[in-house]
Length: 240
Image (cartoon, rainbow, N blue to C red; front, side):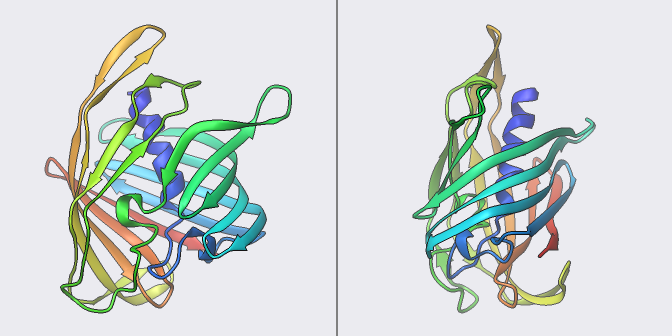
């Protein structure tokens, strides 16, 4: 279960970077010194985070870097959430993020994990959303877990064809906004993890997902999902 919690914390931290449909993480509203993003989750899979951004440098539209500090949580139904402190240097290049952290000698070292910011549909759709019925192609992503924490094979995530629904007004942390629902299936392949020589199976997961992209703030402000009949919601609750 600690493995699942670790993955959830990592994804929760990245989900806060809900990028625009026209650009990516480097143009996110919080990507500036003093920026803050807060995300809260409820339901069967509870994810949350409260992150602060500093030392931000933007090189061009798809390349930037920042220090990310804060706290992320992840929990499954019936279990108390796991909490993790975060302090990473994040570099974004061509829509992909890599991370570094300080080692015992006070020097930066790479974290063995690289995440495509388009994963889960929260970061970029590659082109503007123009109308209901518009589609975005299926995609395949891979998460490499930091092997100082756990030994495991890379986690493979597949997102099915995404289809835009009719625009609707929803309540968000930025007020009532007119937003596009983008619906698709997300499949996480089964794998296994090893803790101090103990090998544990990690089951696959299939989710029906709806991302709510709100053009007024150029953000996916809410993601709804359902796994095995259990509903979950993750929302941006603070943004500056």
